Structures are given as C-alpha cells and as structure tokens.
Image: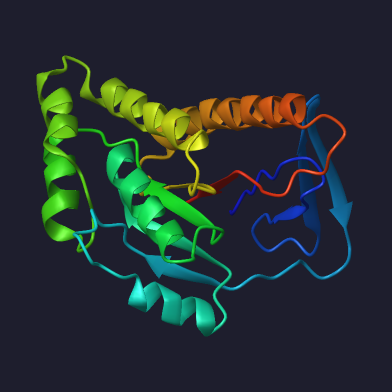
Length: 212
C-alpha cells in the first residue's frame, strides 16, 4: 500500500490493495480527513534517484534529464545521512531544481550487519559509520534502528528540499508499523506548524510518507 499524507488542501491518494475505490487523505492542522472517491485515482510520474555528497562542480544532469522527460517527483535509494541530503538538495536548488519533490529513502535498520549489507550491496545507498556504530554498540539494536529512522524523519521534515520520506522495511512489518505511526505524528506536527506560520493562506507544498 502507498500512503501519502499531504498538507492542507493538497489532495493526494491512498490506495489499498486491489480495492476499486480511492481514499483521499488531507492532513490538516486539526487532524486527518479521509474521503472515498469512485473516480479514477490521480496519477503522477515518479522516478528513482540516489542522493550523493556532491563534489565541487557536480551537476545533476541525469536527474534533470528525467525531469525534462516528464518526472514529477523522485523517491531515492537509502540515504541515512541528513547532512548529505541537505547538501544534495542545496546543490539541486543551485542548479534550478529546488522545487522538485524528493522522497528520501530511509529504513528502521535492525542490526549493524544489516546496515553494512545495505551500504555494501545496494548501489547508491548511504549508511554512515555513525549509524553502524550506534547499532553495534546498542544492547537493543532493533529499537535503536527505529530511533535512528525517526530521528531522520524529524530532521528531514524541517529540511528544505525534502518533500517527504520513502520508508522501506522489507520483511520487517512490525518495525515499519511502529515507525510509520510516529512518522505520521511528526508529519502532523509539521502541518500544524505550517498552518500557524501561514494562517489564512494556501500552503504550496506537501510532506509525504511513502511506505514499502
């Protein structure tokens, strides 16, 4: 299932399995609103991306080509480093792509071994040594992995250039459920904050949760 939580009056679909109906979800300052719609779901064109720590002079040529071909958002490979996301997003902005929505790939990693596997076996993944060290030294690595994931959600929710998160936890449904519940609360706080800051105005963006 894909769940999108958009800010006030930014309408985005929530689809459940093979159901014929679409559930539309609004995130508002006073809570979520859900409505079933028999019309065809809204469709947008996405693409894949992999954030990097851009060296001097680097240009986002490949991503720009995808956008020119019709991509409307990107969901990224694992990037468990908020500082890298910030520098990457700033580089995109410096190259005229600052308004392109990025859903940053993160995970509630269950062990240092899993973290190393993601880093070493999945091309384009970023898992910093600090994350591995925290998992290695923790007496409860599963819980620590969830904590790390939620810390990233919190950081990214306030970061220009990050339109949301793509939470991946294959084979870890229990961990995903707990993380998503808290991530939804973080997203809701962001909506309230946006409403307070721009009272009476239409908000122009959305902060999204994409689950896998």
